[in-house]
Image (spheres, rainbow, N blue to C red):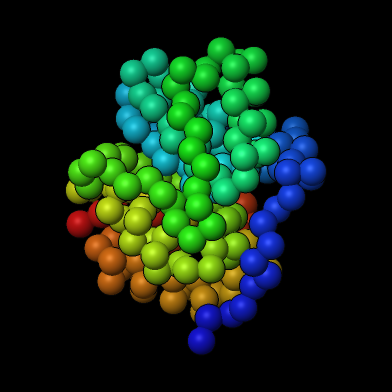
Length: 190
């Protein structure tokens, strides 16, 4: 049985805590983008919050790429739009408000995203199987999914169970590693 987590999402009132100079040094969103995002690609940033990673992904995709910044909270998406507008990158980003039980990004056809990210957010999702299935459907064949969770919220056993679930949904684990002090995995769509 998976570990039980509080389903409360991170409050937009505290969004400033998610986008600080200290966090930028620790998590290096620019380095993550350089490692996993190709210029011109289409990227999904699920649970984007105030855009901490979204901004680095937008820089990396360039003028010909697109980032879908998806979040449950309109207040977080407003922060993303404000930051990207100020940085002159809003044309590279589409913000999308998810439903509480779904990404609500029903593609006209599967395979519309090259790379997807879910960083420090899946533990807040009530139906992980549905989320992973929707992300897998959105990925093009050979597309990649970077998944990371804090170990104090998602124990090793649960993290492995989530990876096994994703493998049943058509993704293959390519690597597991530590992302600073957090568990992370890169998966590829078969």
